[in-house]
Image 1 (cartoon, rainbow, N blue to C red):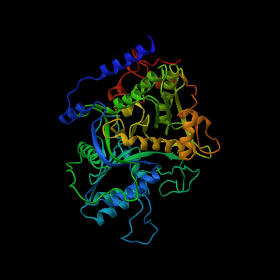
Image 2: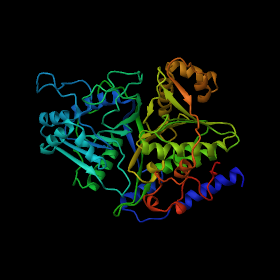
Image 3: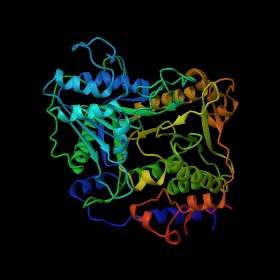
Image 4: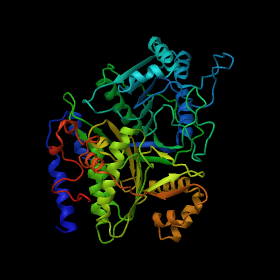
Length: 521
């Protein structure tokens, strides 16, 4: 079978795998828009915030302007984390000065505005660890007894799945979607300094390593779309009815924040497992494949993991073409935690080896960022830029769980859609900004170097100075037979909930019959 026939067979396989299901009326309306998007809505302003130091301060300012409701939805929350400037525990009590920590800050807000309501939704896994977070338990007790605050654990998903969305909605007019949780060990600046004393664990002098992440802010109708998604999730998790906020003239968008995008259409894509009458949703997966297929010149992406069979097959099909696009993926050196390493690191190696057999021009490359001291920077961001026409930011990683098991939401801006042509330049600028951050270069220097290298990001990265921050090529390590078996059968990263309970011989795994990827030796 030649490459073209194999890719055609893969596309047909993807189409045949979409089984018809009965869906609620709202999902039928969404399906009529596009299989890769739930909703399109205009944003009066939109902006991508890079790294959590800037994000937390933006959110502190935005929440200070809240009038009706703050809806916080996340994989994890830590009430001990510092949002930004404010009163600390050792300062003199002052009701006019807001606290710096998340837990007391929300209480202070509700006391200041009795009409304000705060709703917090967190994945139910790991609830027991809250007992080990010291003062957080006291914060949760104070939240519980406060009439303006409601906190819930989200267990509205099949066994083995997780709630992974990171969404904030304020007064239904300002919203956030991305990869940054309001929790500990996320704060960092674009410099990612070695042993930065500000990058410490809550209530402790212990430092953690450099961390890179990003998120997207939206205002207007796009924020209302995320508000609707958030209210639905709150209701599904058993939180009760949540009515839309009333229209208001007061703006939430921080005055000091200049938006990169103005008056743009924003798309929203979701992942959701089938659960108690709710149909499976795989819009995120369809959007990944659609964006990879449309690339003419390049793809720049950042992801915490690279372990998805369907994404790898889509990439392999592209790099097998006579003149393929350049695909640059920024990954962490290794996954965080032994279970994630067992699930994701081996799969990344196996998929890279399989893609490499089709990549005749070596257009697909993975790079690992390091700070000026040579320490690997952990990549937690989930984003993609295609041809400087599309930017997508969300909670979904390039792994199987994010495409079929967990609840995810991504937002994207497509400059090729009607009325969005003016978004192309800010998307290009964002790509330059991210490359500049990882390479320790000025944005203007990145633009000039890309021009000198005929637009090749790979040549730019390989020719960039090595004395400071840099991107190192990912080196494939040899795997043992047990590691290969875990990876090839997707034992810890299945595509659907039912796969978790299938015996090894019946699992679909990374390399399946009829697929484009061949099992590497």
